[in-house]
Image (cartoon, rainbow, N blue to C red; front, side, top):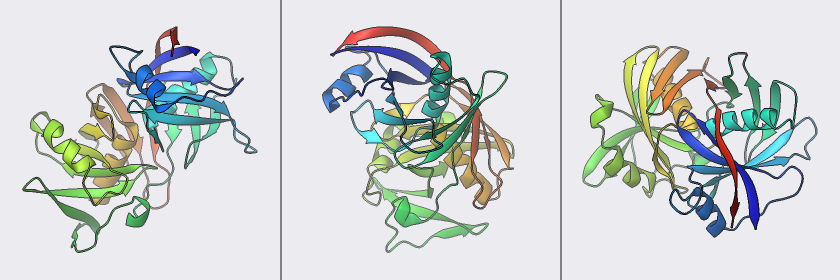
Length: 283
């Protein structure tokens, strides 16, 4: 199989984007892994497959695969790259686009400065929907929001648990540079209380409008940025009474702006999306 692809990045989170709007593309797990391999393939954190939608009022559907070959629910940085892709390829001429993923309907807007705003939907706090097994645990509530203590490799780690269409466990650290992301991240990701594993976020609060963030993503390890992770961290910080409604998030790959008014309001994420290069690969 010979495939044309576009390599894109959003705040350093990088993607291989495939156009399946004219004809379907079905990839095996091994082919996805090959695309994502940084030595023997193109190299990316995730693979995005763009498809037409059969749902009335929805412009596109897209599928998201980790470079491990597993299909996942949601990716905020990928959603921004998706908008740039369909606009740059002439697949649509509007600045506001509606797209469906595995479990969400998103509204995406291309801004005049080239950045993209994604309506990420409302955060989910129901533990069964994350999913997270809290049986036998007692939460510590701060500002009415529960933090859960996990036993992780002889350590006790206190995390906020929520979903942004995919599961997140967010902890607050004093110094992000010294945070044990490489050692602790995989252990939290695979903790038995998370039935589908979890993205592990490490957040340093600078002030009420600024945070620094690192995220160990499911099946991908630490990435330069994680859009849903940024949303989850800001939502947790707001619920804990630490952050305002609009927060700038500094990830290792760049900056994102996250806005949330609370309650059932959607989380809005704004950030960059750029094409890196295009090419063809034989799989």
